[in-house]
Image (cartoon, rainbow, N blue to C red; front, side, top):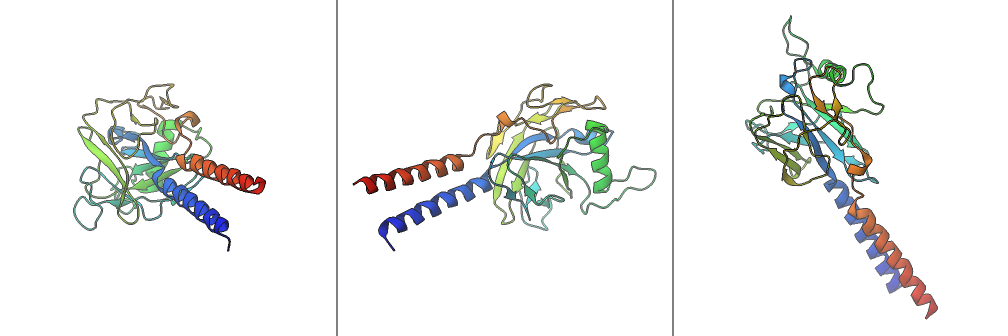
Length: 250
């Protein structure tokens, strides 16, 4: 094999590895509602994840969440709980995870409202959208002891299947009655968020029931950055083509 061919293969492998790493790192927590449990329509906290990579889907099989106890291992008290109902997030896609029970099955006793995943999700969609559910709206669930989000100060940690923190947001006292925490600007890693959702900004609107402002499952394209891996790939590939042309003319 020619040395130039080996170098070319190495370059492509390096670029593709960078793209794969970027795909894993492209998930952000784009919105959090620690006051959702106070909403009588569906009574559940929630958060959303956005894949900022516009090229690669991200497999989230085995991923978990925890609050500020920041513990992945099970069965320790306050440990992370599984994300249910969604196994992959498409390029540029935003998905919502709503809190339910530990198993996703109903534990409610009549006359309380059923609190299985399907029932909670149905009430959530009705409260926010009424009968006009956006095309492509994706909703999943999580639940368990010790992961309820506090409106006084808390966090959302997202772990991959190996227990590594993919992304995390912290928030302090949220005087956000009727509003959600907006992180659609794309802050990633371990960050503190405090911006309140405003109607007309990053797709935020007033819910059908009139009790909340936010943008569950919705995010404007301008808020999703083009992944660095794409530029890295294009730059490396164009450089490789330029190098080959130069050699041919020598």
